[in-house]
Length: 179
Image 1: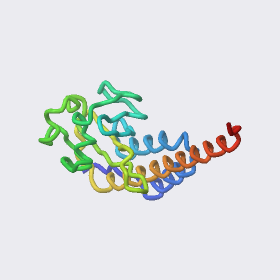
Image 2: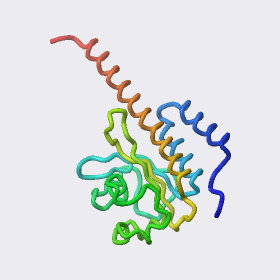
Image 3: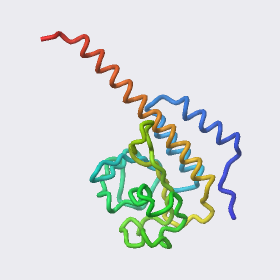
């Protein structure tokens, strides 16, 4: 089995750099770290609402016809199946997974790793995922744990951004003339 990992020191350093990054850089750094650590072709972060999944950012290349802003009906996504526990978080070979074989995305995706981006109140904001055109045997618990840590960092930054926006909005309202 191929050694897909990096040293613990290198992983810790990557996580420290991500945590120290400016908010605008956090998602890109997390996606880059995920893609590099898992040796996958692309990593992306999504938001999910009741009808669709939207790809908010993507790092790397994929043969799938997607990019930032792409919206996909929930019933056509791997992520919704992962969130509903119909598939595991780590799918080294999507063609061997019965719940994925008939999805159109499986033409472009041979391996998938996805985790929820869960806010502190328990709500799922979206997902953090990696994909590869070809199957990737050797993906496992270590890769899943790394993705979960990255998703936690992204969730924290999302909440910080929401808090910053709320404070800015309150300040602007306080300054505006009452009328």
